[in-house]
Amino acid sequence: MNEFNALYEFINLAQKNRKYPANTAHGRRAALKLFETVLHPDELEDLRLIEEKMKEIYLDLISKHRDTFSIASLNTYKGRFLKVISDYKKYGNPQSFAHWETKIRRYKNKNTEKDSKKDIYLSDVSLPIHSPVNKIKISFDSERNCVIELPPKLTKEDASIIIKIIESLAD
Image (cartoon, helix red, strand yellow):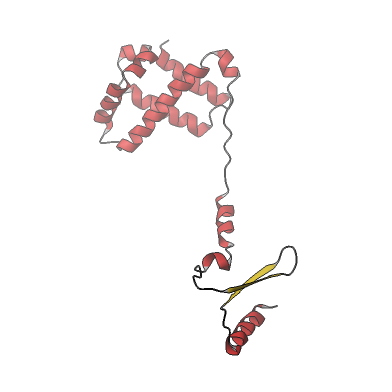
């Protein structure tokens, strides 16, 4: 059995032992299949030879599949291919495989992220004030605070407008 086929078995074993999620295993298998189309028989026998000739192999891959895949996609496949080889070298033997610690990803709920952005304070939205102002901070309780910024010279008319606005906000 050649070393290249051992990579397929390694991916299957890693997936069965939950070292690779199904989508990662599928992506790595696809990379192997793609690179297999440009590898010579002697390269299929030796992973070290593949690593030494990776630039030439990658250029062959680009020239063969440039009409089918974008350069960015081929570069992604190259990264997956090299990662499989690296993982195989690191964890290919049973002793190393037993001590393989997988990285746990923390997934964020996209809806929660959007909801947190909706809760924006008015002071964060308003433009910064460059003129001198009087700031009044009122604490109603431990959770409710109010900050009022007023110009230094406030007329009775301005005060009555502010009072009407505040009264309209009250329950």
